[in-house]
Length: 180
Picture 1: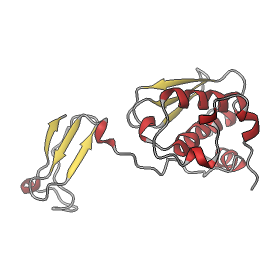
Picture 2 (picture 1 turned 120 degrees about the vertical axis):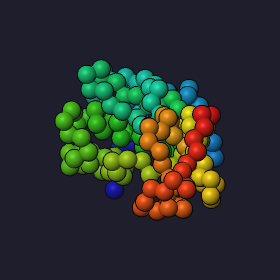
Picture 3 (picture 1 turned 60 degrees about the vertical axis):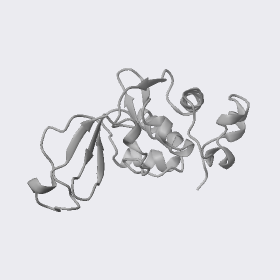
């Protein structure tokens, strides 16, 4: 399948660190905010409908979001630094595909066809699992096995360890939560 990306065209518009070559994508560190912003604005200019812009969001549970009424694509300022350059690029293109197909299409067949057109996986959610311990506000520990869990918000209900007591709540394995 032919890729729609024009890497040569990007080469003249953005600094070398943002070129979408395999060498840059396999870097062992995440991109800086500046690098992500340049990458997002470049991809928006090339592939999104006219008038769309990029912004950062403070969300901690969503990698990216497309706001049709604002004509804006937003990426999480908390999750983006934890992800690989390739995963960030795929998220940007995921949101651009939403902007191209319009509101109300969700992750349906029209959106999936648009993702395939760019040679991207048509998954609803990203497959990477960044370590959320650095951005979580609550840390829970099982008193029996010591398993650690992280949450963004204070748990409303008591929870027992899923390893020590699978499929059933048990007071003996009650997770102890601490604000971190």
